[in-house]
Image (cartoon, rainbow, N blue to C red):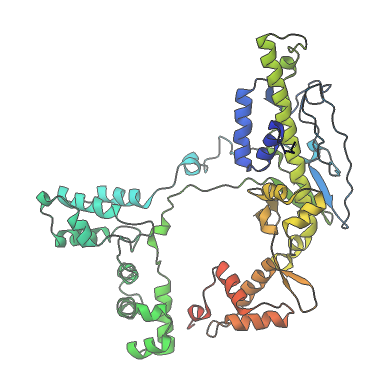
Length: 489
């Protein structure tokens, strides 16, 4: 005798749909529509019989208000299906103040009219150009011998995405067929021709050479040109370490003069290859939309992200209970799978609504005031509020996005650890990061704040954070240490 926990295929399907992102779910729905003849999309204006409780996706409640820290939930009884069919209680519905059709109005197409002369279809559909293709296009316009062209193609292949030559000229020269008798000076001569291509600075071997190539393409009358060339050629290391006193002594410049030279160098691009966009933009489709209406935060599902499905009533009417033929058995199985799939989608949507509504309830301060008002929140808090397991909350918040007036955020963004305050309260790590970012932005660039100084300023605000914790948060924000943030101007 023993006990064993068995997950039904229907429960496995519901869990799998719950953890899918919007794009993956759309693909899953499309595959289900193609493989199951009983499933079809419910288009706007469709009129069909709702007598079968699973004939279509049961009416969803996609909007919920968050107000006065109170929630009213209306429960629905578990639906009774035919004998042998899966029966499961649908999660409690959330309160609504509008109908589905009132919230989700058909938005106008983003495509312009035919008489819009400024709209270019290719600029919105073509893939980005790579740096290599951009350089090869310029190479085809440059007259040169076949041998030089072969060398140029090899050099271009060795240029990385930032525009720098990754291999040494000796390695490139050794890679050619010995019968071609290509010498090192030939490779270097072709490299100098490529370094004249756009973007300026491409094909450089070092940062100093990259900046020098860009300076050479500026007008000769540019102020402080000779000093800038000397700076990037001989003292690039001192500039990187921000040792301004050494620079002024070695270059024999005053502070104001050195400031103008550095301003000229800082106007250059240390990564010229980044100007060429090689990848297509990635778009995020929000699963939940949050907006403020009359001092209330309204949470809605994004209907455009997930199409509504229904069981085709005509095909469902062909199923006969007493018929045991192969065709009728196949149709009955397809009908049951369609109902399970629709129920799993409905359960996913309602669970997502529950979790999103609780997140908005906890983080209304963030929605009103920004990152500094973010409260500590962990999975257990939401799991306890909605009566679900933490693993379920983790699945719901993974690769799900919320559109807010402050931008689009992944649901996991609203979860953060806490740090104790002097008054015995708690402060979110996200809020501390926002405060650190604000302090650094307002610091004196000649005397930037050290990690210890930032920890002291936080302690003055009642937030007890160790110096090493400040360093960890600073690095996560991509902020350099104080020694590297020092500016002369």
